[in-house]
Length: 180
Image 1 (cartoon, helix red, strand yellow):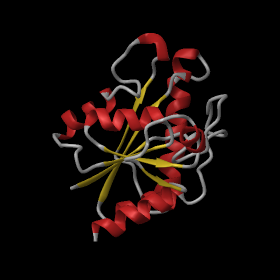
Image 2 (image 1 turned 120 degrees about the vertical axis):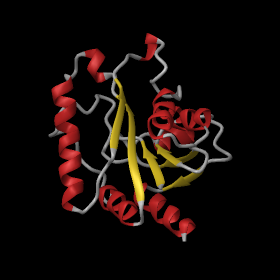
Image 3 (image 1 turned 90 degrees about the horizontal axis):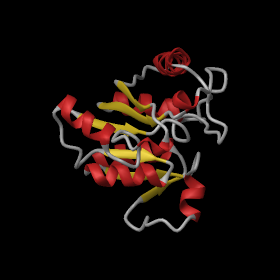
């Protein structure tokens, strides 16, 4: 079974420095949901890993987060796609948890729960913390220019070994070409 791991904000949906706090603010990036459905049809199981410190900050509660994810699931289902699981870190950056990216805790949990190796699994993100988490867990980091992607590229980050795509749709097209 093939897996694909995605960050949420900035990869699947539009990102905001003010946080995505409600289903109304959760807006898919054009082509992202279609790309996920395309990956599903090609046999990929898609998993999302996302930092959601807005919970700890009190910007939204777990019910609101679930409502955002329900919107994602429903929109994707209409296109014939699905996300198998969503892993999220609810902690603040300074709490020192193991699940908050750039630490690999959520990715390690995926490995343990599914009993898989991530060495051939793409992890698509838009930030350097996504890249660092992928590397630490042994996954293959990929970067999209959407969300914080342009800022990540402009910063002095070590990205020489990271393939960069305009968006999730372009990334998944390449993944499917390489699979064949």
